[in-house]
Figure 1 (tube, one colour):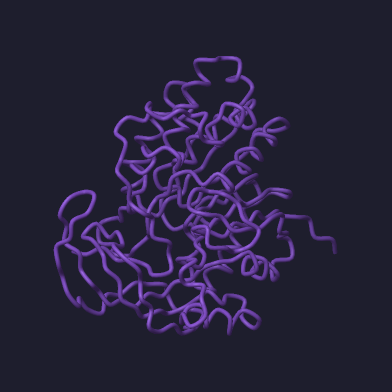
Figure 2: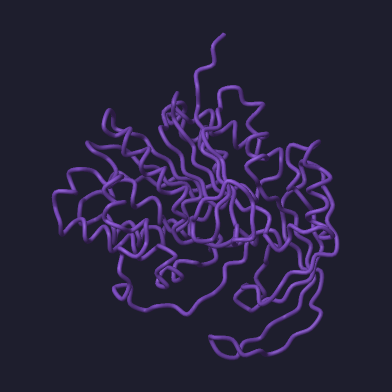
Length: 378
């Protein structure tokens, strides 16, 4: 069965996988340099050279400069009976992950932080958090897919943390993130830092406002949320493209001008990977409460092509996709109704995690927002 694909979500280019991560020199990527690690790894580990090399090796597995990291770019596996499409996992996106880890590390110098990752997937961010703590702390990991939590996530935690007895401070929260405050009232107003990546574009405007309310409810005063979600693709941001034209038409009057229903045609491999450009013929603005979804309207043709992984079947399909994308401006507008949320920083980010203040053609894939909860005076 052909996997569902989002037109708006960025398509990660597949690459030949390196089967041995030690072929890569960690000092070749900024995020995995020892100098960078020392900005967020606890001092109690920094005095142990062998431990730091071990952490560095594990970090280097996940950076996009290392082709081994593409082993972690995988579709999210749903629970039995759930046919919704929740995208793919990503390798390290440094411009949002690094300030998050540094923030948690700084907090840990004065208290034992409570940290939450929402949509944790494999736990590629979660496993790093315990290594930021100077004296201790607690980590919570939420993921809608229990299959992911009980398999891939557990495997990563066991491999990365058991040697230092740190897995015991990581607590899993399976299920819908919107249930966290009701199922775990002990977290209300207690979370120091929240990390969320590749989730919000699956929310309609009503749900996203509820999501921001959830962040506000969970965060402690001066706590921060680090958010990264898909943005418009560079190839789409052109005059005449239906997505771009609708965005330009709505951006001054609509809090969420990236929320769209799109009709288009694409070529896809059986794995779900795109095998060419997406041609969008129609883009309209649905009602705010319309649920995001992907629906295949028909298969136009099928053929066998030669790819870097051998001969594969590619199908040309017509789809309807209801989704949304974010920009720094959309993020800033979205928090206006929430008086206790303050924007600390917001920017664009490309597929290898580099930061950009303005949109450009450099494979921009995400918009990032760093939001702080502040005390509102009466």
